[in-house]
Length: 441
Image (cartoon, rainbow, N blue to C red; front, side):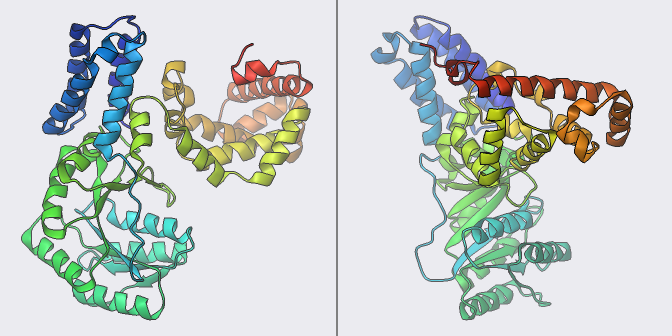
């Protein structure tokens, strides 16, 4: 997420931290670089001007200039201002009010609106809410079919009609939801390739008919400043309650995320971080600011791990590690859990200081996980539990079966053996706990 911006800012902060004393000139030079980095990330120029101005005012204060850790003080100021820029506090869905809760999704065509409707339904169903998806995009049959597939996959209610009247469809859907005691109704309205009066009039008519409590604009995070301009126009007609930014797992420069709250005054409620149904995250300004500034996001990482981890398996794994009895079966299970948590880039980005350790990029390529999984899957049950029996002919067979080279199989076996030895040393107490915790006394 925002890797180019993060790298630029990390370079600036590294220079600041390396100085024992800061003067006005060095702070102004750093602020100039921060301003350029934000403009290159397609952040609104007025937002950049205010953001940098606020930092300058605080960074040039006597408290920072006379501090024994001035660089760290400036980084703290930048972090605080970025959290404020992104909205300060997370703003969840507004549950308070009569049932059902009606959520209206709007957006341009191609923003990922229908997929987001499915992701939102997945998230709300996991909270034990009964959800209904409403196919109100009457101009794109593929959208109705896609929503029908998602509803079947998620085992949630679906309302679709042959009618070409989206206002009537939404009205009747809400009436049905009230009768059937549905908790949440998600309206997937029609998108257009551009904003036009006919589109806006139709959306306004739907909103007037069903009175949605949440009017969320789905925006493609990769479009940068255009996304902000789109949000302004939609807000004028719909009085938005928030936005959802999609495709932030790609090459998004960050302009939309860092501009939209300041320009529109509307919170970002969710961000899309992948193609899977569970790749929709609540937007936490402090966590996102930390990710952008290379400070990691341990809270989200732990939440992901808890969501995908099996507690019983985790306890069994802990016992095996203590006894040095880890097998390739266990290793394969761990690989699959890691894959379910998201891409390696996302996971590494949540680890504080990971970029400084050289993690990420080619060294932690997702393809490596796929290759390792293929190699282990090509082993027999006996080979996974007794890797010492894997001789030359077995290695060739495993390589052929996994579509890899014998050298790849050899490398995995060596690394696994080294890991087993390390686990045995940990279990026997031969490695001091201080080495594992990083605390030396």
